[in-house]
Length: 138
Image (cartoon, rainbow, N blue to C red; front, side, top):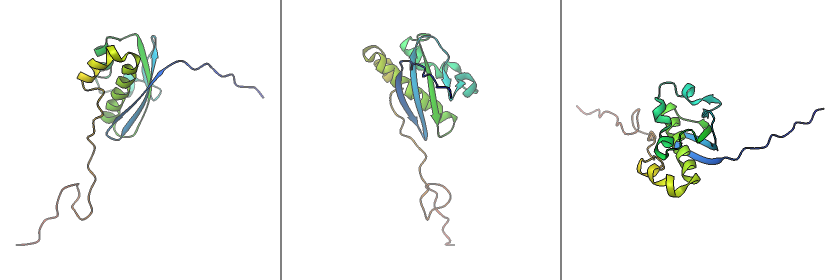
């Protein structure tokens, strides 16, 4: 029986991002590499989204090409997953250099967790969260 040799883990900075029902666990690495989401290139995973949008945190902190990220994203739809990824990436970047990176990310609203979620449906009402049943009078 062969023994598996352990590969040394690379140093990374961790950032957790959330949006709607999506959760993104982001690892930020130093150096050049391809940003991957769920083991797919980011452009392939988010096909209908402009690359400018998902590299916004790198553009704001002027670190394009200095860092790359890998992420595991689960839950929700593509829009929520993209928001969760951006939140996690921004949190990881702000830990790299808080004095320099935190202010531009905060002013762009990327460090704030967006609390908006779908409202739950209440029992006794019609199909949606707030729709009332029609009154039988008249």
